[in-house]
Length: 477
Image (cartoon, rainbow, N blue to C red):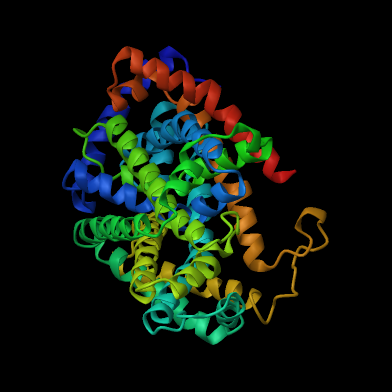
């Protein structure tokens, strides 16, 4: 489904006229002050628990180097093209994701149903934040646990009991969930320049410094060479079809795609900044952080004779065991969990921003009121995830559906967002930008050389949708 060239021509004047008006609107809403500010903000969104928590354990589960290589390929053919498309749509519309898509569809004479694509992304981000905040609260809790020396000299069973004790205590989880959500709301309420931009210019450099410190320490642990071989020497005999699809899915998730985040951030991007260069830079930094996280974690794992494929418990059970046995483990354990908080915090900010931006536009709320309203609803939904870890652990609301049997509310939110909403959102973005939008408008917004544009456009139209659809079908099956 594509607009004809005559449609493009007839609507180009109206569209460009609206762009000028939208730029005026943007001036009131705020813009990123520089390309660096946007890169830090977008990187802050992309770098989160997926890099520090999920990437190391799925790499361990899928054999190491071959999985990493496949992940890098997936970033190139899926991640970067969709990120460029999302940022382009956001800047083209100059409003919240829903409003940007409404404006583009109206001006280009496209079917109105496409404006719902922004709503899918906002819903996905909102639902993710509700349980993401709970996990962020775990990291906040573990800073105190590590700093107080509770991990020192503990056995594996004792470390496991600490984590199990945290999950079984709803009031403690509620406290740390509330603290984390408050941190997110304070930044978002302050707006683009005073809130988002100021926060990421402090948090992102601090995150990189902390990560490098932990990597430096890992180099002295005795397992660094083995970790480097595990991460960077591919053994394709260990790579399965499932591993390829996991790599593809994580490449998609780690860049905050399908959540309307990049559309929202793109709406604050000045016209003179290259979308392609910034998207590629963000993707490279995000991938570098994931690899550095692996180099921070796996040397410690190998040096202590632990299992790299320990699964989701790698961060909150396996690593605390190592920190408890090593010299200065309390200090470096504390630094590691502060790093985890910073990563989660910047991502949490980006997940709340799209719905706050929408509430400002559509409901006429000021930023503080819209942030408090959206944040409190998200916080309240997070309570259901907390209870599903303890008091409601046996409650499976959709247990009558075979593929959802035994899944708690926490599990359902994770499954529904990661396996349905995010791939669906990404697939719709690829189709909309690659097949539906006016090619003339897309070319003008991206300002690429003819060869670079053909490469991006061809990948987005023919390669990316097939890859995302494969992940979508695989996850459902």
